[in-house]
Every structure is written in structure tokens, then in C-alpha cells.
Length: 259
Ligand code: APR
Image 1 (cartoon, protein in one colour):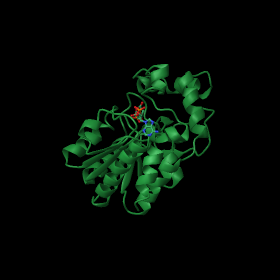
Image 2 (cartoon, protein in one colour; image 1 turned 90 degrees about the horizontal axis):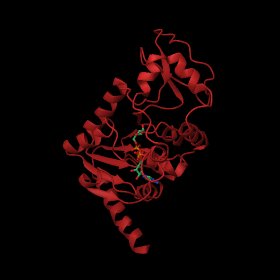
Image 3 (cartoon, helix red, strand yellow; image 1 turned 30 degrees about the horizontal axis):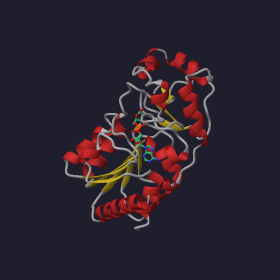
Image 4 (cartoon, helix red, strand yellow; image 1 turned 135 degrees about the vertical axis):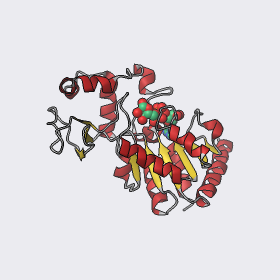
């Protein structure tokens, strides 16, 4: 065990040195970033999709075909078991040391922006300011017509929301559904961060869901240095410059201790 932690220490020290000498550092986080807050991943050994099966890819089409029916079905609790498990974990979750370490790196000027694929809102609850939630946020509604977003706070809708007051459009949860394009403004903002970045931290993501994960390969093709923080190998590992085989909380805590 001692040898392994020494190895991680060397990798973390190398990551810290790369970050310190980089001009613009962007982190892309995935479900692994929230595991230590009690939220399951989607893939891998204990993943939700591994245990319940990957949901059908036509969620957005089914919503669009019958928004009122979708809201009726999703507002009561006789919904899929994996949704109940995920919802219960999301309600109980709090930011962990890894989220606070990202805030510390941001405040130290070592981290310029975070693009998270997570919808749990833990990054902003930890105090992160420069954040793009590329798959949306579970506690927000979004109008499909004009893109207007409104925060729900802790409120969980019990009725289908009225049409958008601004444009009369259909309102849905901000969370990007399977088959739903990532909102243009969000994708443009994320791509602008990637285009500025000369260093990318890929934290807790299997890097398997496009177009979000495709940004990692684009960053690489544009010359960015890639640092992966993940206890397991991913499809990104082979093109990473530094690989920290550790859990996000521990690795980020030790990384932040260099600032
Ligand atoms: N710390 C860091 N990484 C971890 C930890 C941990 N404690 N535990 C697990 N991981 C890693 C796993 O090894 C895996 O590579 O987190 C990753 C989780 O992968 P996924 O479950 O595929 O999550 P993610 O990459 O975020 O999925 C992307 O898929 O279903 C959609 O919209 C959903 O945003 C999600 C997207």
C-alpha cells in the first residue's frame, strides 16, 4: 500500500507542476466526482446503468411527443427504480473534499474553469464560480423555446409547469435527456473554454458520452496537456500525459495542497 501511495504522490506532484506552468487550466468532471458524495456512477462495476440497464436513448423524443404525459408520469413516484435511487442520493448529497479542493484551486488561480457532466449542483454548492453544467442541473427548469432557465431551489414540482411566460414554449427540467441536443449556448461556452485551455483535468469520467467527452479529444488535438484522475482506466487514459489512479476526493485534496 505504501508503494502505491508513493506512486500516486509522484503523479500528483507531476500534475501540480504541469498545472502551475500552464496558462489556462480547465477541468472536465463526471459522475466519479460525486461518488464520494454518495451518488452512484452510471457505468462501471456499481454503476446505475450497469445494475438497471442503460435507459432507452429516446427519452427526449418521448418527452417531446407528450410533455404533459411525461410530467404526469414523472411527478409521481411510480417511476423507474434507478430514478428513485438516483433522486434519493441526489437529495442527500453534499460536496466532498474534492469539490472544496477545486474551489481552492480556482481561488488560487490554478484552475480557470470547470465543465461538469454532473447535474447534482455540488460544484456550485461548494462555492465554485467558473462552472459550466454541460448536461444541465436537476434543480433548474429550462424552456425549450427560448432557453430561459429558472432555478427551483429545493422545490420539486408536483404539477406540470405552465408554458414559458416569455415565449409560451414548453418547459422541461434543465437536465439534458438522452437524445436531446446540448443547448447551443452551453455547448458554445464549453467549447470556448476548451479552445483556451492548454491543460485539461479529466476527473471521474469514463469519457464515453459524446458530445461532452469529445471535447477532451478536441483539447488534445489542439495541444492541451491531459491529466486523468480516476481509479480505473478509461478510453482517454492512453492519450493522457499524467494518470493519477486515485479517487477524486483524495487526489484533489493532495493536489490542492501544492497551492
Ligand atoms: N473518483 C474518481 N473517479 C471515480 C470514482 C472516484 N471515487 N469512482 C468511480 N470513478 C470513475 C469510474 O472509473 C468511471 O470512469 O468515474 C467514472 C464514471 O463514469 P460514468 O458512470 O460513465 O460517468 P460519466 O463519465 O460522468 O458519464 C457521462 O453519461 O449517462 C450519462 O448524462 C450521464 O453525465 C453522464 C454521462
